[in-house]
Amino acid sequence: FREDLYYRLNTFTIQLPALRERMEDLPLLVDHFVSCFSRELGQPIAGVSAECMQLLNNYTWPGNIRELQSAIKYAIVRCTTNVLTPDCLPAFVGPQPKAPTVPAAPQQAANASGAAAGNVSVSPEQLGTVRAFVQQLLKSGKDELHDVVHSEVDRVLFAEVLRHCQGHQSQAAELLGISRTTFRTRLQSLGLSVGKMLQQRTANDESVV
Image (cartoon, rainbow, N blue to C red; front, side, top):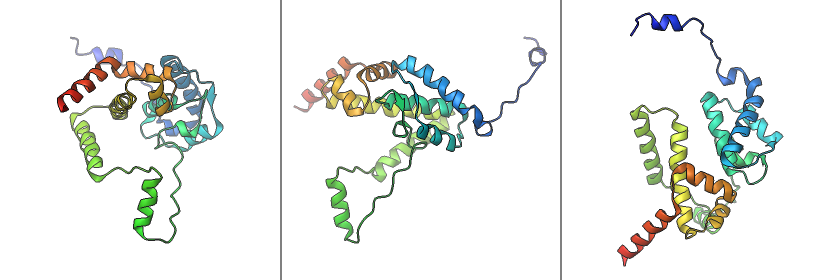
């Protein structure tokens, strides 16, 4: 190993500013990632709506290019048309939901109406589990944490939805709000097997009996 190897190779250094400091590049980057992930996921996307692009421009992108890359991939997986819209974007980029207007009534009535409408809230115990998982990742020194967490959540989500639909991929894709092609592509990328999941469910049911 040559001690001067670094200095022989390090002849020219380019300082690349953060994405938030060169937002004029954002449309080009978005078009590039949309084109790449459309081919990778088998989801033909013609473009990005003006409202969606505005939200992407308004976000500061603390995670730089990798965060943008992950957000576009997430949006394409969720997209059910050939144009990305604000509803496709991750929650941290997309439009913030409006706070529901609660009339002057007892809190129990408000909670009952929320349950009747099908609203599901995350319990403190569930949030604690997610928080512990994130803290474990931080201690491990891993990078690209958004991709790691996103993949783990998708792995659980896709597996449970598929089990709920008893292996019917079309029903599972419809329940997730994505095309069957996108669903099958994502299953493969997550390393999930329909047959193995159904066998596991059958084994679990037999053990209960």
